Length: 84
Image (spheres, rainbow, N blue to C red):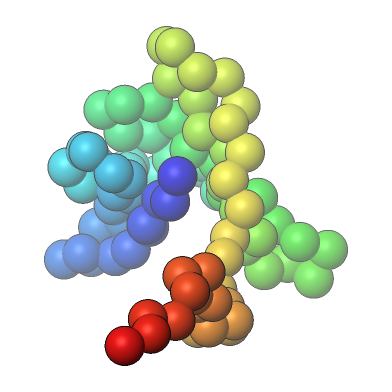
């Protein structure tokens, strides 16, 4: 599953499939809360954000790793070539 975190109108929001965007309010440090639970951003040894952990009433400490989509290799087609 992919999560998208972005700033919209000076507000941090998170979105994932089948859900509308949820506003995240700062609690302190790298921790935020929204209508669906808490999000804590995790950092690498160099201090950059490398992912997040999410918790809600039904979920505890789900870890999501940051993916740089601009660095993904091109998709590989697995279909066989069409012959006339």
